[in-house]
Length: 310
Image (tube, rainbow, N blue to C red; front, top):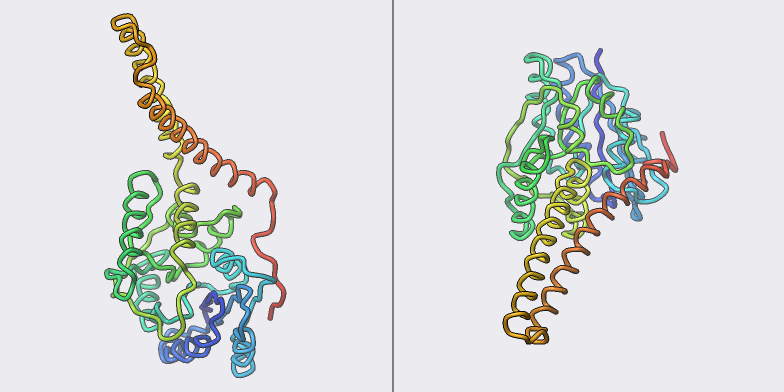
């Protein structure tokens, strides 16, 4: 009998933990038909509500429900990595606990892997219904930017809902980097992926834990982790402004020799100084971002710390 491991990251999701489990086990017929067993691994990302208690109740009902509880909030990326480490299955799927990833798609996803030979089946939203317009706008701009500056394929609207073979999961685990951007890791390791499109499903209960600011920082993580284009851009800007500065020096010298008034135009000169210094700070910020990531990698801290496992 093959085993399916289901990784479910949670952070303050006491309202949805049981709902997810109840919806997931509706696939029991699918499991029986394919001689497939399952394990559900909830990853508690340092929740401050009763999420752990709700998971413990499920474990008492069904021993196939497991939990890894973090000592604090380490973020969803750490949660997914912990899930991959603890998953024992021949097949592994990552799903959101808020039911925005419909468990009803699992039979179709499994068929693509077992019958058509794909290494993974991933999902992407074709609509962003229920999402704030400003958030949707910046999300699309991020994916558009990544397509132009990165060689790694990152698909617009891609969800974390993905079914994978054991071989692909082992490849993900071989990448032990501290600064993780799993959507980029999926594309970097390769393997043959089938994309399933579906319309966006809104949360059943609760509110999203991803604020605009968190998403912005997450997007920076992706850009820095899977593209060196910003560094090239900083170098190009430096060359351009060196040329501009040289031309301005020639203009000032010629104007002084011709008109003999070296003090005129000082406001425009101040504006140029401010512009050039602003660009310099911007380029230093880009370099600093890359250095900070290298610094965290060199420290070699654990990606997460587990407080409780069963």
